[in-house]
Image 1 (cartoon, rainbow, N blue to C red):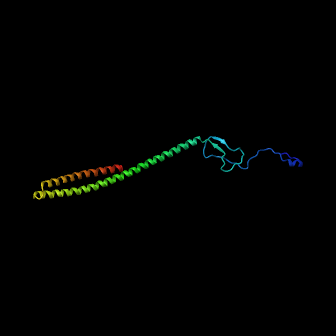
Image 2: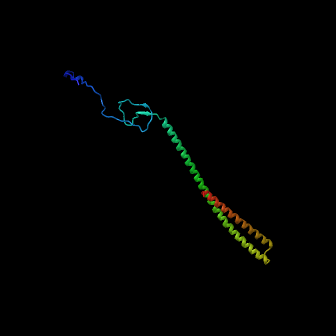
Image 3: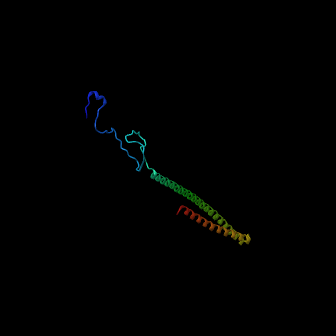
Length: 171
């Protein structure tokens, strides 16, 4: 340090050395990448949230596009699965309704067969005593045979409806 006379004291103090900032700030980015633009000068005053540098975004833009495509694909898959599930539920409901209808038809045909059997037996007795004609006996025999055939067919339909319901359930 060099001392000057009081007359030159107004001109200042001369010293050798270096200036150290009172505050220091370390910078860190959330992502890594190549810096493509520096937006401030060293030693500049900056404010919180101010953009200081720009990092190349080409790789990140491609990764974002891939992620968005994957989300779109996942949504499409989800919609397809949901549609298939709804379709399967509707099919199952239809198969259950078909089986109920077949069971009701079987019950009705069973009652018809019982009535046809009783009519045939009565007509046999009446024909034996001469109170009914042979044609009435033939008619009741045919009705009884048709009712028996309808019963067999209804049983087959019920069986098929049960198999279709089981297939719709995935059993």
